[in-house]
View 1: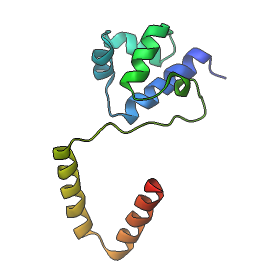
View 2: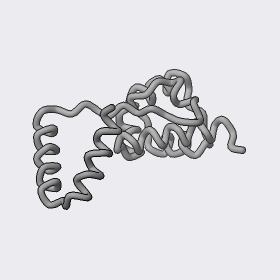
View 3: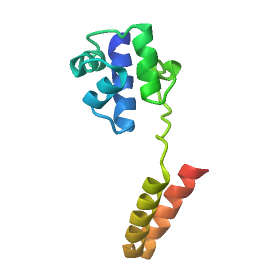
Length: 115
């Protein structure tokens, strides 16, 4: 069984990846060196409470979520209008190329995510 330090590091890594951030990007957001992020993620170091608050904030999760070693709800980062329009346009292009079976599957996926 993994130690609490290792499990916490794994949750931080999962949340970081879910936000699409590299260790360097997270380190920059919380003003530490990326090697420190790496040490936290592998369970070599515990972050201080202040650092843990910064990490949770940067990853859009609560501290409590980081200690829930079963699942972690991750909030998607906000999407500005230009990015939303670009994403929508790209999705529309992909959908135009999809066959009926694929469209049906995509519809079911979107429906399950938005319910």
